[in-house]
Amino acid sequence: MPEHTAASRLRLSGLCFLLQILNILLFAVFVRYSPEGSPGPCPPQLNCSRRNQDSGFQQPRFQDVHVQVLLSFGLLVAFLSRYGAGSAAISILITAFAIQWAVFIQGMFYFFLNGKIYVGAQSMVSADFCTAAVLISIGAVLGRVSPVQMLLLALLEVTLCTLNEYILLSLMGVRDSGRSLTVHTFGAYFGLMVSRVLYQPHKDKRKREEQRDKGHQTDVFAVVGTIYLWIFWPSFTSTTTVHHNAENWAVLNTYFSLAASTMSTFILSPLLYEETTPRMVQIQDATLAGMAMMGMAGEMLVTPFGALIAGFLVGLISPLGFRFFTPVLHSRLKIQDTCGVHNTHGLPGILGALLGTLLTLLATADTYGYRLELVFPLVAQGSRTVTDQALMQLGALPLTLLLATLGGGLTGAVLKIKVLRCSPDAQNKENAVFREVPEEGSDPSANGKEELGISTLV
Image (cartoon, rainbow, N blue to C red):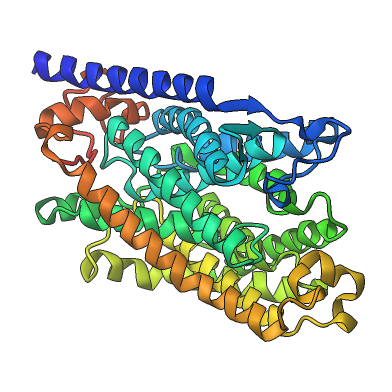
């Protein structure tokens, strides 16, 4: 056992060392600061449509996005009573690596010029978006993969997520400012496919028992996480339209949607569960669903009541999914979704994409006025008809699902290779960081000798 534990520690330490040295070398050779903040024009060889002028480094907006990714997502994966605050520490590790790797990979697609990658504020914002997709995926497999496997998941997913984003936003001209597809949908179904590949029948009962194990003592994480979602997510949704007058639509529609989805939880929860008032984790789920719904449609809705209707409906669909569809995922599809990312990110992301497609069909110069050029520039320029743009928006959904499932399947196969696996006892020691909050009824003085129900991948 001691040698297994030492090997586990060295495996994580060694991988972190190798990945950080790799990033340092790649940055030294390829990455330079962009001249985008200078008064001169942007070099025509760069894809300038993917970046904004760095006026004051867009500091408030950048901080909103970064806080949202680092703090809110960190708290969202910390509410499970079997994992506790240790999972937030791992999420910081994944964020630290994924941001660096995303800056490089996205730079190769968007900011590569004369053998160099030029990065600026928008590069960091885009990297934060990609990191959010990785953290969503990790929510589907939390507690069943080791930190080493999470790092490898991030390495592969950042690459595939960037490829998906490049195809959709640059090649197809899809509008997805708040990332219903490229973050929420891709991240959710990538993680669910990894979970499916890592499924183990003989451990299914144990995993199912802990799948939605939210202890009352850890509701504080859900409280703080939900508050941060309310504060920062509207900025997160509207960051890519910060230079547009359409920004106000994305911000306000997101607020209206999350308000309506929260109200839906108080309507439906007492009917589905034997509780008069929803628990904070249920309100947290509704908040996430309402904002994922507005990822694509946030800048397209022209009336407040439309955002209220959308938020209200997704606020009903998400808890129904937890109540009725999640058991099907376990029993029939053999998918163990630890944090319920399907109902809080995947399904709302799909619904948001469908809503965005419908709104695209209704887009006219009379409806949008001068904003048509901001929201649908290709339509305003006459390069596309509204129908063509709507078909692109609709086609982006199956393409995202295809890339996410294929990428998740490939990643899951990589994580199952023998060199990354160890005995159940050794894996239990390696995952000990997740058990900073002991299970109710266990003896915290037992020094980890008592079984706490953490599931493992063997």
